[in-house]
Length: 228
Image (cartoon, rainbow, N blue to C red; front, side, top):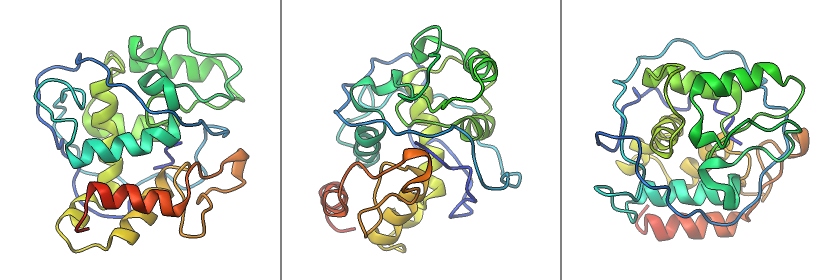
């Protein structure tokens, strides 16, 4: 699950990496994987205020206008493989006893917040990137998405891009951050990704574990960025 309620690992300003006019592109096929247990709450202090990006809504990755072989789209698919599995953008943390009243992509952020408030004491990680409540509210606020915003694939991708930037995406792509450091940073955000020792950064916390080996993670990154 995405635990980006930890302090940002870089200080860059969030901005969309993909342009586009609509949030209703078709949902790309998701890879198989597993969801992780968790209580849906953060255990770090709230983040300090951060400059807000313009609330532009990109197309869903892989839809018209955005090549599915774009490196960032491939990285998000790698993350989704260990976080959301076959459910993709409609994934809900498997430990949630009371599920949302509709598939997440058909709900607004306000409806998701209501579901969270009305079902305390259970995990609430949601969507392709398994946003937990504090993270979801933070990144939605940075994008300027209000409660009326529908949790579409494009919106989820847009929110996940902020987390990639927190991990140092732009610094990594500029060649000034080693691949292994970027991978460690990603593992601090998504519990399904491993550290070099093969364990999750949140190993054992509320049942979290890594869903791939470090070798698999490293190999996947090398395929996406051969010269990284």
